[in-house]
Image 1: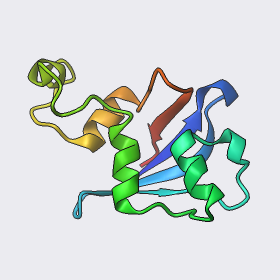
Image 2 (image 1 turned 60 degrees about the vertical axis):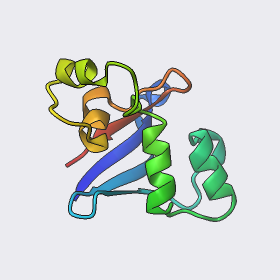
Image 3 (image 1 turned 135 degrees about the vertical axis):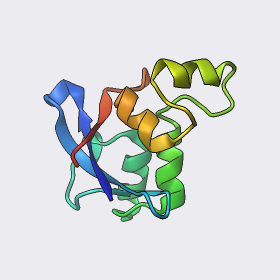
Length: 113
């Protein structure tokens, strides 16, 4: 099981949620601490927590991850993978190589273990 911290770069990488990846099942799952200030969460996590859903489903967690990494159908994906030393498309490894950085917000994904 891999664990990641979803953190805000502007707040000295303060964790706002936890992301876990089950390598056996190939599933991500996001855990949002109850009582977390909704304003401090990425948009999709904020929507989930505002509905009282603090543990996101594997499907919704994967959607969030895929929104933070290069899409598998991107033109020249092979060149991208090669530039990061990867042989195939794996969301967890791409997330680790890019820290899940997005130009749309200030959040990063940092591997804990």
